[in-house]
Image (cartoon, rainbow, N blue to C red):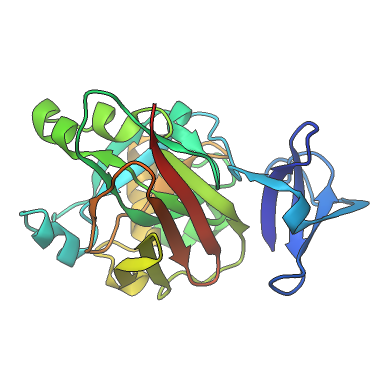
Length: 258
């Protein structure tokens, strides 16, 4: 299923995206399907008439993973890590598809990073690899926007990767998806800048979820970003970035200065 969070001008609602591209509709469901079984209300709305929102607002945290593709580690001037590199992001950084990414004052080097995001579906602690599928609700696209000058200057990544609007998610959550070898691309104003495959991750999803859950109790709605392939770069105000992942869809956001 493709689970979307959306609005038509009223309070946010959830629904299942159905139909062929160009003729898709959202079938509304009762409540939040992350917390209760999917029950259709009978109401539908054309996808083009709805405004998609971030498919999940993490209740507690977003966990980022750094340098999880060897080619990206090399382009950043480092070696591939021996263990996953984790960092925390506040949930106030999350925005949805179509929302502007506001480039913060004080930073002149804002970069995009297209990534696969894992959405956790149940409370999880010390999860063995073989049981990871039991705690994953689904997957979505993410843009791990980073202030590179802050990242260098601070020495740790909280401000550089956690400022408001720096973590777009969307367009929806795809469930029951095999993410072992999906194509992941990032484009600036239609020009491809990143083109990789999830098979090239140093640490796969099962390893990451197990590793993260050994440090942090994961709650429903928590999100784990899985790293980015090579091809990251800087953006200018007014540029549009698309993150497209095979089997999920395309997340689009435009960068603006306040």
